[in-house]
Amino acid sequence: MQVRFHLPDFASQFKFNLVFSTMIKKCPEYFREGVEIASVYGTFPQSLWNGGRTTPGMCDINFAKAVIKTFNKNNIPLRFTFTNPMLKEEHLSDKFCNDILKLANNGMNEVIVNSPLLEEYIRKTYPDYKLTSSTCKRITDPDKLIEEVQKDYSIVVLDYDLNNKFDILEKLPCKEKMEILVNACCNPACKRRTEHYRILGQQQIAVCKHIAKKTSRPLDFKDYGVADINCECADRTIFNIKELSTHISPDDIWDKYVPMGFNQFKIEGRTSTRLNLIETYLYYMVKPECKEEARFMLLYYLENNGVVRIEGE
Image (cartoon, rainbow, N blue to C red; front, side):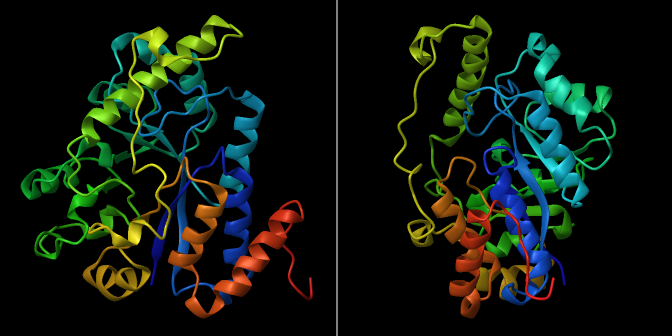
């Protein structure tokens, strides 16, 4: 049995995800049956093509090299969240994003896509990358979803409004190719979600413009004609989201979704706190009876510079 999890974020949570992945290997007795890390997704700061979450700041290219090398050495692919829906032709030549794809262009890493313009460019320029169809596309019509799955994508991430609609899920083909987001914090059937993705894309472009100016002035989106987002959903924790109709529990994963043929599951949390991520990872991947010990050991390893050792080594 394979229960494959896609985790956030390879840059901001580099050490955390590396330690957690090592725990899975060295302490398998803590974990539910079949748990494995399928990828760590995210972006390096100043990636203009980034979407879904605004990522401010700058990134040293040597850090990017180290992150790519470290995860790949541990047989974990990186998936770049290049899902900005506001890209134009002029943005395709962005040096930083192209440099990142050149660095990671080893046949192992992947790109999550949303913009047809960027998808075409990546397919042509970097054909060795596997492409994932993003949940940002908001495909909720079953027939259109089936069409999407039949296209040349390695994975299609479902819109989480479909999460517990088993009358639809049971009829879908190629379930092993579909990825289900299990802990969505957004309101079910949110009417603002698509517009928020557009604003987040505009914000990411503004971040990169601001960096290019090399100014000491703090970034203000208003200076770039971009709105800000004040969403009450953003601060929801793993305990809050359990009340949402789109929530999927770990028991549901093993008792319902895996027997149906699904084995790809996404945990969101690129802008989540470390504390919330710890509780989320434990909730989904660790056996209930092992949570306390696993939590202690995870914190212990993190405190000890990420070095994971077990008795007898």
